Length: 184
Ligand SMILES: [Zn+2]
Image 1 (cartoon, rainbow, N blue to C red):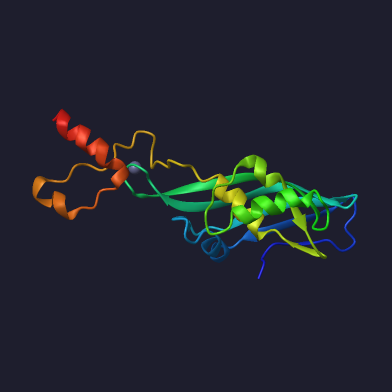
Image 2 (cartoon, rainbow, N blue to C red; image 1 turned 180 degrees about the horizontal axis):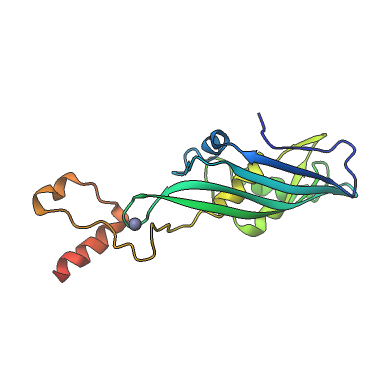
């Protein structure tokens, strides 16, 4: 079930507003499989949408706080994601929708490799539009690729010699640790 629905009935050029909290339970489901968890606070969807001819124009903001791991020391870090949402939705029967459909088919399967330019156009059908996938996509785009607990995080301290074998080291950090060892 979609949580964020645009109601297209009687929608005109003046438009309507959708302002709704993003519950942590929704975030958890939306971010599942991405290594990102809700931080526990409510987020917010705050958008204005209107009709322009047969198209829908939507503009607004989404925000939510998530928990990711520091890329250097792996401690949990809370990150506030704030995204601008800017969409044009064309009728599914519109030839302009072919482009949008094509790229949507290509991005299925749990991957989240979107670019900002791709998020602009999509298609709609019927009297309701579920905004959920757009909210999810906008938030994922804001997740920092290299989150840090602090700018000067020094990473995982090398453990004492005897414990070294018990500790799993993030493979991305292995070359760094090797360099550090050589420096000693
Ligand atoms: Zn850190």
